[in-house]
Image (tube, rainbow, N blue to C red; front, side, top):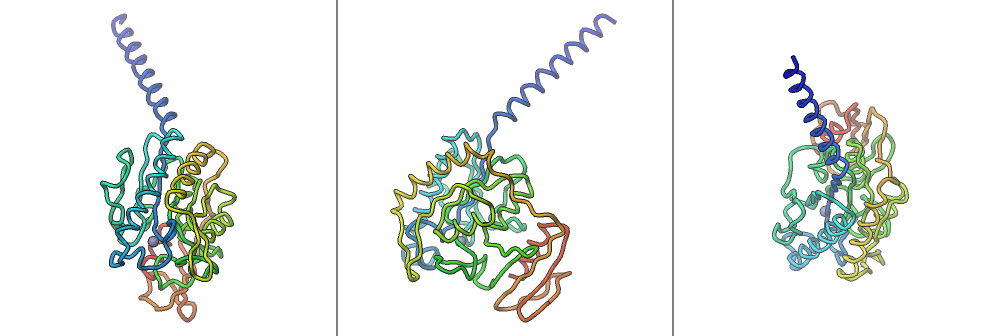
Length: 289
Ligand SMILES: [Zn+2]
């Protein structure tokens, strides 16, 4: 009995020590998710800048890595223990792996699920950062404004018209993670602050009669590095962006695509779809956009 009790006591002690260690590790972990698009990078002004067939694409993908690396550095300066970078533009193969800060983990390539630009996010992350972002379709005084594809006129959920950064913030919110920082043009910064509140941001450029006036890439990197660090340190001030379900989307498009199961055509180029699942709404959006 005595021996058995000792064994039990020692087993309990070992379990307690293990639990304490696991809890300390959880407390110390700081996981940051960085989604990087291209249209909102400093210097980008036309579609050919961000299209693989464009004459200057090789230059702009290098600048994309530069802004991504500034965000990664800011995150680690703020104490991050793990950084996931999601290449979020087009086919998601713009960031060359060898160009990305070796401390980060790069999620590269198109994915099939509804999360798309947010693929890889889950509830173990503590903060989300957007870099290179752009305003939604139809936004005035914006650079390369669009929503996902050139075909989308407007996309709303429960009456709220959303840019990519808006529904991506909802995906983060679904997992309880706040979006703490955005870099892009003046228009996307204003648009996302209008939805998410006064998050930290860097407007790297602004539209002037369809042209772009902005920071040099080096100045943008400095501002992003500092801004991301400050934003992650102050992350407790920002709440995850959540919307109560069920979710009703209204999607307006230029060219209609086949109906997603359960969706209704509610007007010329207009589709409505309702689900208790936000991700199912995004599946419907992705199928008909
Ligand atoms: Zn893009």
